[in-house]
Image (cartoon, helix red, strand yellow):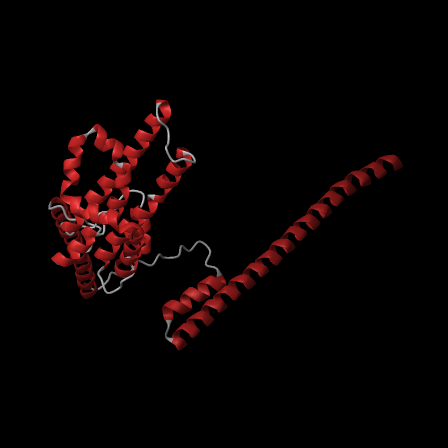
Length: 299
């Protein structure tokens, strides 16, 4: 009987403990929910208060758009998508001014292109008439052309000593030198005074700043060509030996003939081209010496 009563009390106590535990858990959950609701209400009150303060500031300052934008950034509108500001369309007057400016730029570019085409056409026409595009467009009188042509006689007369084999092989070539026979006779009769003619040409023409560059440039080329003849003269004296007779036959004689003919023909062609160009009033740059002459007589 005692055991039965103890079991009955234990059986009754177990449901009571279970009910007490469930009640305690329910109270804890309810307390947590209550705290969460309080926190949520506080946050909502803070947001509402901030928005109320924002509206008050907005109404006080009158700058509604800027205030809303700044407060939205501070408060962080959740889920709000910022509106994209569309660029303001330029006024019609600004469009007209921009169109006029573009039209003016296009017209200026077109005018420049037309001017460039006209210059190119003029250059092509001048080149077709035989004008030297590197020479300045300047007219020279007959005296200036005559002086510029006569200075080429200096290297030509000095190169006549290399023409002996060519005149023997081709006697008809002497007809080209026939108009110069009086000047050739006078030149060889000068003897040592030939050096005086050289310095007179250099000091009186090349270094004379009173003369035009056209005359001085041609005289500079003639002087440089005459100086260049010193090189074959030294080579000839070296290979002719002590007696100065030179080779009398074989390969040595053939080499001397080719050397003499080459020196004379080169000098003759350069002097002829320079004299003819000077007579026509054109500035022609000769090979080997033209660049050096232009450096010493700049434009």
